[in-house]
Amino acid sequence: MKPLDGVRVLDLTRLLPGAVATMMLGDFGAEVIKIEQPGIGDPARTMSAGHNPAGTVFLATNRNKRSVAINLKRETGRELFMDLAAQTDVVVEGFRPGVMDRLGIGYETLRQHNPRLIYCAISGYGQDGPYRAHAGHDINYIGAAGVLALNGESDAPPVIPGVQIADLAGGSLQAVIGILLALAARERNGEGQMVDVSMTDGALGMMIVPLAGLLASGIEPRRGDEMLTGRYACYHIYETKDGRFLSLGALESKFWANVCRVLGREELIVEQYSEGERQAACIATLTEVFRSRSAAEWLAAFEGVDSCLALVKETREVIEDAQITHRRLIIEIDHPTEGKLKQLAPFVRLSETPGSVDLPPPRLAEHTRQIVASLGYSHDAIDEMAREGVIGV
Image (cartoon, rainbow, N blue to C red; front, side):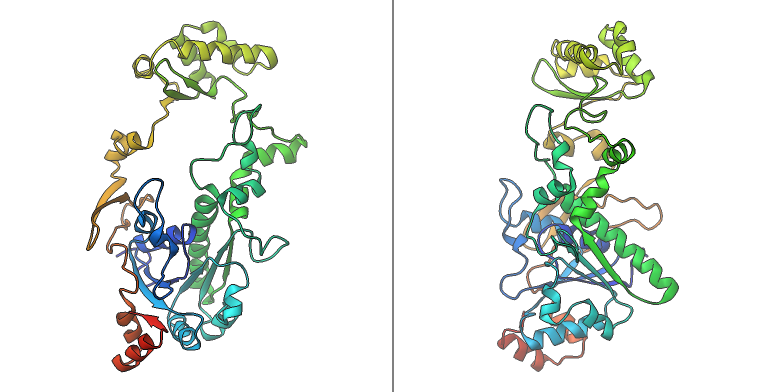
């Protein structure tokens, strides 16, 4: 038995944040029904990840779900959705604030039919406030939260992160946390509630350390000039002779001392947190030293040394890494049309009730007939709705 067995989730989200959140719920037993537009479906079905074929984003984020195609712009379609919501524990949507209300199936309406319903809305800026209706993407949300301004070197423009921080850490993970908290609260009081997930709010939550300094001292953090953003030689990235990079995180004095000894620069031990020209000279020295050998040579030199030094790995190296392989974080699943699919495994580990992949990503409308029939609709009624474009089958 899995932790979320018996929990039904209606997933109206598209693209990345909501899809990952509901996938995580599905990995741990929730019955996730993906509501899609007939004939079109989730736009992620045609999106590629980088230079890969179209559809890779959808395939990577929609396992353990069933697809039902309903036209929510038709009154009959909305009635059908209301029937589903009445028998549902969680609704997750990712539209701009107000869209679901305009369709007549917003939270206040749904809760009248199902007081136990947990309604999670994922949006860029939240359900209220002056930015609530603004369009945006990850780059905009991390910009609004201050995360983007701190990425990069002090004498260069901000650098776009290589992963979607607001979408995933600010959206997907916060949605899962909010839904689980609401489910726990419902166990106590029997009532559902609204979960308002703002990806900007979630990104701001990643700013705990920079904000702590600003709120305590009034001194604004500067890009590339904070303890954890390149100010000190002990927490830095260094290029090697062969053009690879090493990450050094020797914040504790014992680690820094070990690094200096391996480098043959014991005189720098006392310079760990020096400032100004002395720190700049320390960084310059380590930069020069690390460029004198290849990455493999340095990794061999540091083998067995407590130092917090590691290779900056390229993506292909990560999926082939011994630690990642040992933890079985890349798995292979069977798909009826795509064949073998390699994916990231459920990355939350529970010792007694682990997550698993039980269903491959669904074809568009693959489960419409099955699920609509379970609501009591006859085969003739389902055929009629399909002919009228209310549902896709």
